[in-house]
Amino acid sequence: MSLKIKTIGLLLALNVANVQADTPSATEMWEIIQQQQNEIESMQGAGKSASGASRTTLGGYGEMHYNNLEDNDGAREKKIDLHRFVLFFGHEFSDSIRLFSELEVEHALSGDGKSGEVELEQAYVEFDLNENMQAKGGVFLLPVGILNETHEPNTFYGVERNPVEKNIIPSTWWSGGAELTGIFGDSFSYNLGIHEGLNTSSTDKYAIRKGRQKTSKADAHDLAATGRLKWTGAPGIELAATVQYQENITQGDDSDAGSAILYEAHAVVERGPFELRALYASWDLDGSGPASIGADEQSGFYLEPSYRINAEIGLFARYNQWDNQAGNGSDSEKKQYDIGVNYWPHPDVVLKLDLQKQDNDSGSGEKEGINLGIGYQF
Image (cartoon, one colour):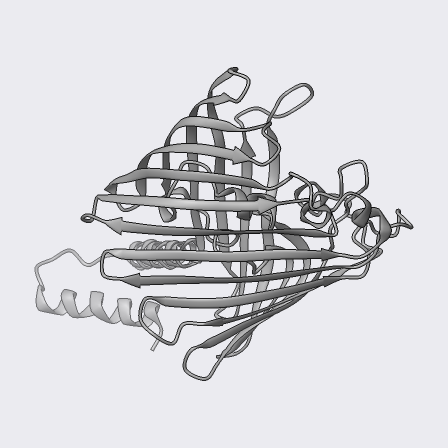
């Protein structure tokens, strides 16, 4: 029975029950029915809008740093920097298709003569192929290391991201391409991706970090392939290993350079208030160009024990060692010691303090001092 017929029946019933009431005319009854119908349609439209809005999510994170560091020549650097402000936008097109995106502003200002940048760190569509496998296409963070995919400031110790994952891996590292992810067994997951590769040069001493193209008109003559296997079969334990291969790390622009292979392995172990993070990463670059300056081998590792006093306070120490020219046997190795504290007044808000001391074999470029930071995510 239609809504209009039901409404007419109700009005007639009321008229019979109260014979002394004034009987509405046919015109008045029609106006009442139309008003009720409009109200119902309006409520239904609002419900549809709310349902659509619930499929779109907004989030983000940010952090500001204060660095007070002195180099080995006695020069002191004091800086306050809004290091990054990131907005996350996600949307579910359906139960099996969704969008992820991150828009980032670094160092507060961007443009000609400014130190900052505006970057699109992620922008990909993910498809559920079945309950255990997904595929994604677009710009995404590569599955390597501990921090590259999860680097919100309240999730790690230390004001600055550790120098090994910064200079060797190098975090934050994203690329445009396609990737398969999935799980099997009770505790294994995998990632298999094809994406833009690095583009280094002899001018930059084949430094890995400077080779990131960030999907900005990226040269795609030589794509890279990345695979990761992760095990989380015991509570509080993550073990993972990543391998990446690229045919030419200069996109064919340097005849003295060739292929590049990255090996990375890490472990995260939590036992009550104790946590240990350990990571090793190494690059093997082919060609006489990288070999001539020792850049054919670039490697590093770090160990980071930490102790959570309570829900709000945690202490950590970290030993970092890395070398972007490890192949020539010269004094190019760098070591850094960090010790500090994190304070979480809320699980998504953190205040940080740490002391750092750098010890370089070359005796130059060392920095030591204090770092302060505040960060959040939502």
